[in-house]
Length: 92
View 1 (spheres, rainbow, N blue to C red):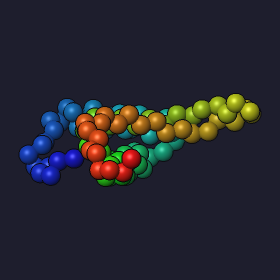
View 2 (view 1 turned 90 degrees about the horizontal axis):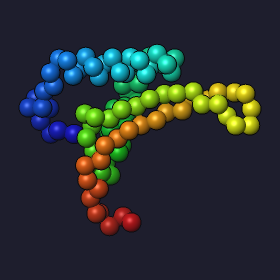
View 3 (view 1 turned 120 degrees about the horizontal axis):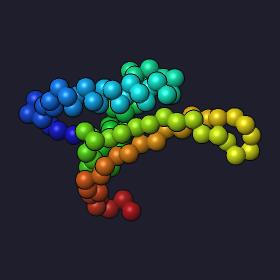
């Protein structure tokens, strides 16, 4: 996450591509793009407390997975979060 977001501006093509990805994921999950963006923002905020991540390249997907013991499908959230560094804070 950048301390100075003004200096790290994205071009319009990259912004449009990210919006389209979120829209497609939201459509598959029967969830609004706004909710998907809020989920992504929350994940960035939480994971960033523990490690340095590349928040511009995070990808989230919502899929429906069949439960093995019955015919029901449940929603599953997948996140691909590129990690730059895991600082040694003596937690482990």
